Every structure is written in structure tokens, then in C-alpha cells.
Length: 271
Image (cartoon, one colour):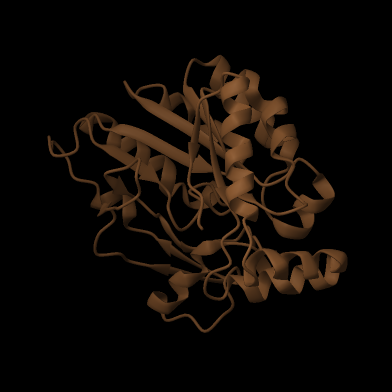
């Protein structure tokens, strides 16, 4: 897969960015682009700002100087929530080689922030020794399905479901706060109740986000539907292009289910 990627090493001017993400104060994105090639990825809008002509998922820029941009001996970030990452995965396969995320985390330890990491990769287990050193941290794993056949169609180069669940379990057993981000919920493909039941013993809370087809995402989703799930194409068109209450009903069902099961849930639905 990496042989087909356009991979470049670049230097970045800054690495800690203020963010409007509800849970965080700052974000760090060690890479530009992503090699998981998720068909539903909302971050493809980033192409507008990167100057890439390649398709989203076909390129990756390595911010080789990223760890050097973390300040030393600063109290500015103490108690602030720093999140990795918002428009890439901090544990892409090339992280094994470059170790940018590991070096960044190591540099963050003396700054005493709250560390938040969201990933689809079990490579994060490599850094559990560093993550343990934060007084406050939370580790999240994204799931859109537990079906490996569906996963291969929509998240072709992400870690397998089994590897993610095993990694989640290890972090939980290590006493590190964990959550599962059920995202995106794909109509008729994501069994969110099944994901909850398979992971609930290893998490502190759940987050939920529905499939957002804004911008160029719909073209990618439409393509995968027509190729792999043609019977769902008209149903998706009805949900997204006709006036209906589909997502309102799903959101209400999730909230009621979590209340009944006494599970903490955070909703990030797009309506």
C-alpha cells in the first residue's frame, strides 16, 4: 500500500494548534493526510489547504520536525487538553518508522497537559509506557463496524477490529481512561448496539457520530455503495436528500439505550 502512496517529508512551522473541538484546547497532527483510506473520511476537506492534487488517502506528508516544535519548560499547557489527532491518525503504519507521535508524547510529559488520543490502530500499545506517565489521559478507539468484511470495504488499511478491541482492553487493564468513538454510524451497516456490547467492559464512556456526507464525502460514499451495497443507495439518498427524521430517531434511540444500560454517552451528531 505504501508503494502507491505519495510520501513526502516536510517541515512545519507550528504543531500545537488551538481548536474548537468541544473536548480539547489544542490539537496536534503529526501528519498531513492519512493512509487508512477510509471511504467516509470527513478530513478530506483538508485537501483545500494542502495543495495536493492526489486523491485523499493517496498521499502523506511527514512533519519531520514536529517533535522539535513542542516547547520546553512551559507552564502554558499545564492542565490543558491536548488532542492527537483531528485530521489524521497519529498511529499510521509509517509511525513505526518515523516515531513522530512517540517523540511528541515524550516531549509533552513535562508540560503536564491532559493527553487525549483517538486512533484506529493498535500501534498505540507501543507507547503505553509513556502514556502511563501522564497524570490525566484518555485513549479512544474509533469503530464504524465489527464486521471485518465491511471494515475492509470502508476502512481498508486500518487495524483489524480484533486488534483494536485487544488494544482497548490492554489500556483498560492498565488503568488508563478509555472510550469508544462509534463513528461514523453508517445507516444499515453500523450495528452500534453490537459495538457497545463487545466493548463496554473496557471503556469509561462512549461517543457517537453519524455519517456526515458534506463536501466531497458523498461522492466517495456513493461510489462504495454502488460497488458493494447497491441495495442501500436509494435508502441513503432518502436519508440525506429527502426531508425525514432518520437521524433524530437514531439519536434518540441511542440516548434512551445508554440511559437504560447506565452508560455514559456523548453525542456529536450532524443534522
